[in-house]
Image 1 (cartoon, helix red, strand yellow):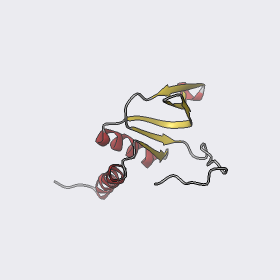
Image 2 (cartoon, rainbow, N blue to C red):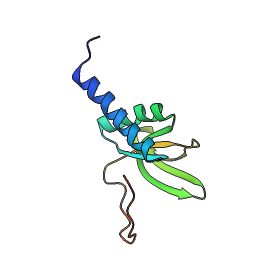
Image 3 (tube, helix red, strand yellow):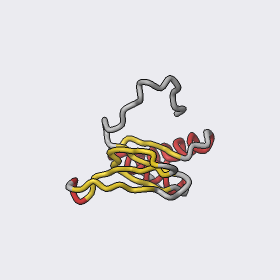
Image 4 (tube, one colour):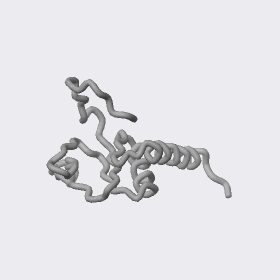
Amino acid sequence: MNRQPSQILRRCLCRCAFQIANTNDHDIVLIGSTRRGKELAARLAQKMQAGCITDAGGIELKGQDLVVHRYTLGGNTLSSEVLKTAKKVISVLPNRLKRDQNRRDRARL
């Protein structure tokens, strides 16, 4: 079985991300929405048996639901989607999420 180096790298990245998420019991994983990031998000979600949303433009918590906003229909419409799975993998568009400067604690990566 002859595999290309890029295929080996993709599998290795997915395994590493999966081990990090499982070791630290993370239910939500955010990944940058690049070409490689979208592919990694899909592979990781499948491996984690998680729901997956790509190209998220915003994320907010409404009650117990994590609401993800993303552009649809070629960018003409903004949709709000809720993942009902226990584990979630979301790829986020660049420069869309801002860190809250008032918080003193930092999220564990």
